[in-house]
Length: 133
Image 1 (cartoon, rainbow, N blue to C red):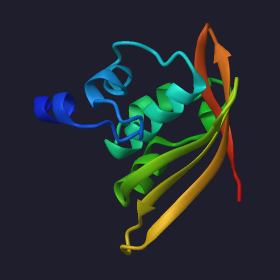
Image 2 (image 1 turned 180 degrees about the vertical axis):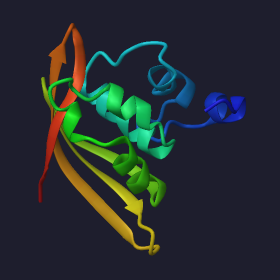
Image 3 (image 1 turned 180 degrees about the horizontal axis):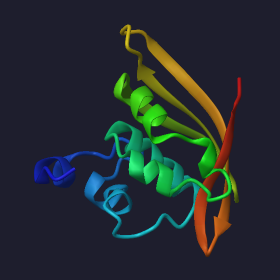
């Protein structure tokens, strides 16, 4: 995350088509907090891409955070090469998306999720997600 070229000249992996420096980097660098569930979802995808497990846990709702393990998230994310994120629908407190990745065997996989977000202390947090087809 400290590589200036990566930060300043790379298109954000979240699929926004914006530069990383003006899209998800400020969130991952704790400069500001995402103001919508969609922005939070995009930044969480980038956190997987860049193995920012602390950010993933920090942006998980306090009432569901206990169900997530730093080690389990890190182990899963380290084995994958993230390809892209597509947001299909973003509503007031939900985001329907798919994220494609190459697994540890080199096979392209697709994770489809309907995520729910909830505010706590005026900030949006990831609450939970379910698979969709």
